[in-house]
Length: 88
Image (tube, rainbow, N blue to C red):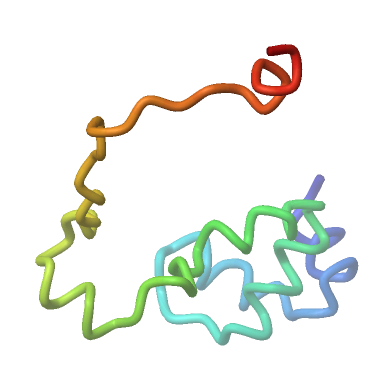
C-alpha cells in the first residue's frame, strides 16, 4: 500500500505518515486512524495498562506482581462425603 493510499484511507495527510515513519510526534487521533486503516486497531488494547492495578500500587511494588497472602490450612478435622453418611 502506498503512503498516498494509506493517508486517504486513514483520512490523514501524507506528511503525517512521513512524521510517523520518521519517529516524530503524532496526535493520538492520527495514530488511531492509521492503525484502523491498517486493520491493526485490535492491538490498541495492548498499549493500555491493566485497569485492575492502581498506579499507586505499581509504584509501591516497583513493577513486581502483588503477592496475596494465603489462608492457613486446616488439617485438624477429617471429613466425609454426605453420600457416605446416608449409606451407613
